Image (cartoon, rainbow, N blue to C red; front, side):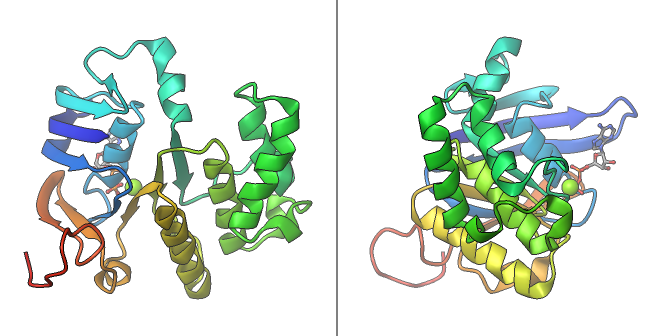
Amino acid sequence: MIELVHVTKTFQNSWTALKDISFELEKGEFVFLIGPSGSGKSTILKTIMMEILPDEGLVKVAGFGSDCIKARDVPKLRRKLGVIFQDFKLLPDKTVYENVAFALEVTGAPEKSIHKKSMAALNEVGMSHKRHSFPYQLSGGEQQKSAIARALVNDPFILLADEPTGNVDPAGTLEIIQILKNINAKGTAVLMATHEHELVKKMPHRVIELEAGAIIRDMPGKSHYRRGSHTENE
Ligand SMILES: Nc1ncnc2c1ncn2[C@@H]1O[C@H](COP(=O)(O)OP(=O)(O)O)[C@@H](O)[C@H]1O
Ligand SMILES: [Mg+2]
């Protein structure tokens, strides 16, 4: 589904942001990508979106390859991915509903389906009652929930979340995590980047840990993706 094979990326300032990164994400997996600020988390997410292409190695996403993807195919790939950010990136002059509906409008979705799908996505994150609010009228948690609805409305196979709780209070953070779990339970894969190690410690999911652009740990999930019922550590 998603595979990085010996990916290396050096920026023009000669800083090597990613060093020989290899991992694979399975369909429907929930994975945390952790590491301190500057360790390469956002750069990995950008290589998956093919916003950044590796200098060496290969990124494979949903049948597209970083070695051969055409510029005109990049929007096609993006449409298969849901993405949320620390700063939400909601359009400030549109309501919550309009932000979500807009993500469908730009794909040329039929008029009839736009309302139905937008409302379903807003219901899923518990934001339909605030659909007529503008982003500035909402808390950080509410803005992120709206951004999640927008990311889900095109039915992506994976949600990429870059520090989604960075501007959200502790109660909102738990809510966001719960929403991501619910989305994952319905079959959408989730790759969440965060520097908040404490948040991740209590979770049963796979954790990929970065340090200075390299993977220092890739720990399988404790229960979710295990075949059979034995529980010893892997
Ligand atoms: N466009 C860029 N140009 C130059 N350096 C960059 C660029 N993007 C990221 N970097 C550098 O690459 C490293 C990894 O960045 P990033 O992936 O954003 O880390 P993280 O998301 O883990 O905080 C940092 O040192 C950062 O300064
Ligand atoms: Mg980052």
